[in-house]
Image 1 (cartoon, rainbow, N blue to C red):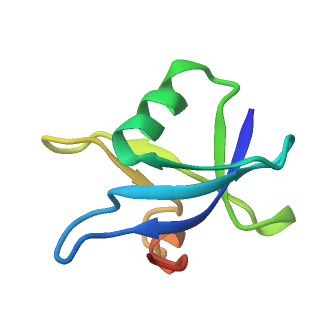
Image 2: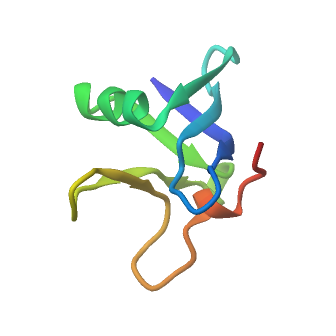
Length: 88
């Protein structure tokens, strides 16, 4: 299943805490915590989260480089596209 991330919630001074998304195939919408989305992405290789559309879509990936895993959408040295989404 593939979803497109449409907005993020970032508490003041924090990291992405929640993400709003839409299913690319079924068009249903939802909201997930960062931890729930990480669990979903890691539970099945067929689960894919994207930022953007078409050829400009960037995969969201889990990064484990500290005490707590985080999500990112971008390559090292470029802007994280998750942080460029609308915030709520």
